[in-house]
Length: 116
Image (cartoon, rainbow, N blue to C red; front, side):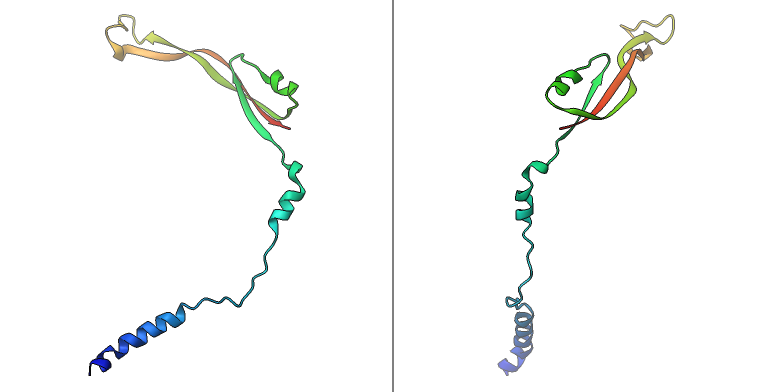
């Protein structure tokens, strides 16, 4: 009687074990990707993006090292900010709420994409 009650459990365990069988006889083709990488070790190109802001320009250092400019872009950028009072009778030292921050100097930011 005890064996009859355990029979469904034995069948479930057997089905589970049969379904988890791995297939070791199948061989999948493998591509040798490492060989392709080793054949062209010098084909890797180096790229770098640098930015210079507000009159600062150090691109000549990179050009002397053998870098070439692939792309150049420029855009306006705020270089410095200044605080001004919001009203004439505002005391900025005592009342922080009446202080307004405005752009002081506007310069140019240059963005270079370099390649070697």
